[in-house]
Amino acid sequence: MNRLLPAAIVIAFCVATWLPSTAVSDNLNIDLDLGGDAHEMVLDETRQIIYVSVPSLHEIVRVSAVDFSVIDRLVLASAPRGIDMSDDGSRLFAALYDSGSVAIIDLDALTYSTFDVADQLDDPRAWDVEYVPGERLYVSANPGSGGFAYIAQIDLALGTAQRVANNRIIRAAPVFAERDGQYLFVGEGFSPNSLYKLDLNQPNAPIVLEDDHGSVSGASKLEVSPLGERIHTTSGQVVSTASINQVALVAPGFTQYADDSHFYVAQFNNYDADPNITIVASFDTTTFLPSAEWTLPCPHSFSSAPKDFIALPDGAGFLILTGAKLCGLIGDNGALDADGDGVIDTSDNCPYDSNPGQENADGDAYGDVCDPYPADPDNLSACLFDAGQQDQTIEGLLLQVQQLKDELARLTDSDADGVPDVDDLCPGTRPRAKVDDFGCSRKQSR
Image (cartoon, rainbow, N blue to C red; front, side):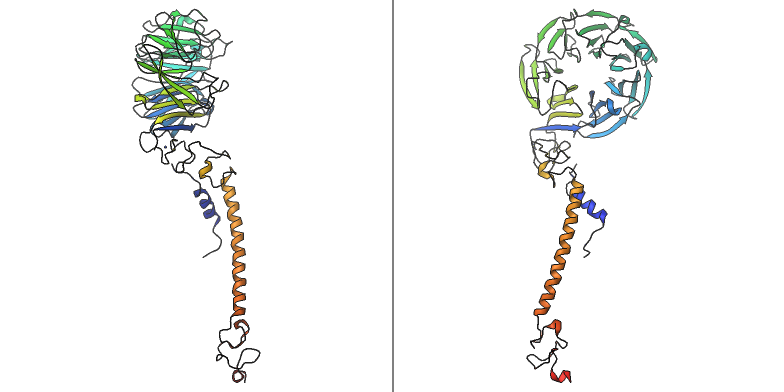
């Protein structure tokens, strides 16, 4: 057998020794790296896909809602921020922040076109989009607290655009929420926050109601109840959509309704809590009191607040966007956790070795329990170094073996004539025959 292997085989061996496989407990943790800071996500229940906008990469990342792995990435011409899906599920819309336009993505063909609304917005920094029945799309812009921008309405059927909301300037990251296609709610982040109600039954969608400025807070993310009678803000306010007056106060955070009887709140705004976890609580819509809660392994901090929250259908789990991660907790829906440590395989740094705490001392892709070099993040170099060291050891062993063979030969006297075989010119003499100094009998010598 050859002592030395070709370099390519050695490298392949080194990689194979720690390369994880391609997540059985009651609940599974998700910790999926998206590659860049994410902004918003939308669940496509029909295709079982989650669309995530990642502005820094100019991408819409498509994530499987089955095993929560990245399927692929759709690269856009500019940075996508707010996203929304058409009611029939055929298109995804994305506000392209640095181009004053909207991407219209065909979700079957995975191709897209753009619609420019920079003139209507009066600013290129498109921020949020909201699709409403009747082929209307609403777009906001975020010029910052000192900038000026308007709300634009696109008629997708006619291919036209116009300003709406009484041509009012709405500043500081305006976001949308709507439920039944009758009214659109716009949250303004300028301090103090403001909340506007637009009547979508009128062609130019005028503002028909707004809060007493300063009475609403947490307008950076809005959620409307299924019957359209309440709207939630991230400060925990529950506001009547009929009067824009507060009717209840719950825990601060992102809200999403399961049905009209209860809703969930991801309580990340409580910065006195453990920053390494996020609590999701279920609230009753009659009493507005919590009825259950779940602990998610999702970090939060004041400087890096989560961006979005989804409660999966049928109580299947919860997803949170935080930084560059899609984080969450789901019920085990079928052999997604091979080692049973509670971490889904596609997020597990040791999918076949239990590592529930995901300890990873050297910060590479492999947890301590399955990392052949837990103190060295460069596993390939470490393995190749070991292979080199091992090769030197083999050389040494072979030398020792040869030395032992030589020594054995010096000790071996097969014809028992008193001359070791290595020095015996006549190793086949008759046993115990009289021989000369060369191991040959006198007869042989003659």
